[in-house]
Image 1: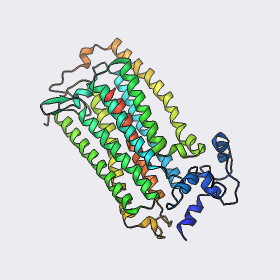
Image 2: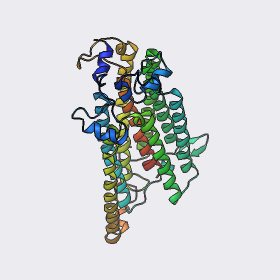
Image 3: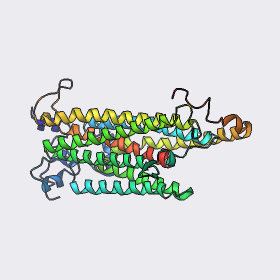
Image 4: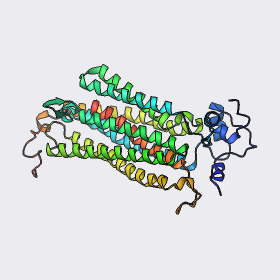
Length: 244
Length: 146
C-alpha cells in the first residue's frame, strides 16, 4: 500500500464527473448521499468539528465575562495599568500582553510554513519549523506563568482583588488559564508530531499503531489547524479582555 | 489552467492542485499547498494589525473610536488566520458553511446576555447601596496567606 492509495481514499475515482463549485457545489456535496466534505480528509473534518465545539466553550467564557462586567456596580480594574511593566524606569502599558501577542503570531507563522514544508516533502525543514513553533508556544506559556505570578503577588484572586470588581480575577484566571492549557497541550502535540516528522514517519509506509493507517503530511496540516485556532482565540481574548 | 484536463477530477476538487502541479513539478500536487509568498504576506499583516491593536491602548483612545477599532482589527486578524493560515479560503463551501455558520448563533447569545447583564446592573443600582458592595480591599478581601 503506497501513500498514493491513501490519497485516493479521499479523492473520487478518476472517472467521476467533476464536482460543481460554489453554491451549486454546496448543494451537490450535501445531497450526494455520500460523505459531504469532499475537500477534507476525515481527520481534518474532525479537527474542524472539535474546533467549533471549542469555539463554543471559549465563547461561553467570554460571554460570561461580558455579563459579569456589565452587571457589576463596582469599577472594573484597568487592564492597561495592571498589565503594565516597568522597563528602564518607565511604565509601559500592556507591554507584556503585546509581547505575548507577537510571540503567538510568530508561532502561527512558523506553523503555516511547517505545513507548507511538509507538503513539499521537506522533512527536515518541516521538523525545524515545528520545533520553532513549539519553542514560541512554550515561551508564551512561560510569560503567562510570569503574569499569573505577578498578579497573584499583587493580591489578585478569583474571588477578590485590590483593583476593583472581584469578577476581574475569576474571569482572568478562567479565560487565560483555559487558553494557556490549550497552548500547553499544543506544545506537547507539536513535540510529538515533530518527532514523527523527524524520523520520516510520514514518508514511510509504516502503519500507525492505533489507527492502522499510513501517516501522511496531512497530519501536520491538521495539527496546524489546532495551533492556529489557539492563536485565533488569543485574538479575541486580547481584544475583549485586555483592550476593552 | 491548461493542465486541467490532464489532472484527475479528485485533484480538481482540491481546487488549487492544478496550478500547484504546473508551478511546482517537483512537489507532489496537493490541495492545500499554497505559495510561500502569501503566507509571508499574511504573517506580516498580522504583525501590523497587532501593532495597531496595541497602539489603541498605548495612545489611550476612548469611546466609540476605541471599540470600533478594536473590533475592526480583531475581525481582520481572525479573518486572515481562518482564511489563509487555516486554509478556509480553499475549502469547498460545504465545509466552510458547516464550520463557520453555527458560531453565528453566538450573536443571539451575546445579545441575550447583554440584556441580562444590563438588567442585573439596573437592579443592583436600584436596590443595593454601593457601600454594601464596595468592600475596601483590606482585611476580608485581601488574601491572608501572603
